[in-house]
Length: 64
Image 1: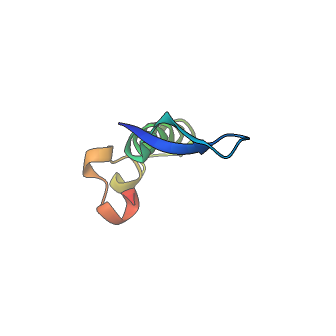
Image 2 (image 1 turned 30 degrees about the vertical axis):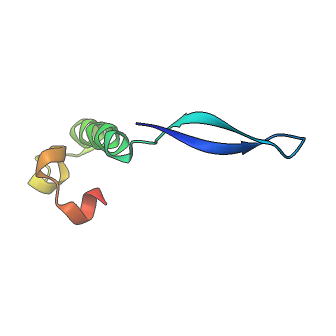
């Protein structure tokens, strides 16, 4: 999503520039995938289901 935000110039006149809103959900999904890969690579034996649950099955409190 693009947002227009005021950007001050050196003369005190405002212009607008577009910025892209940070998508924390996508970042969380990437981090979760990396976490699962790390657990599978380094955890001895069978990890707990919660350790390797996909993003969709992760509890809301953990995604916040």
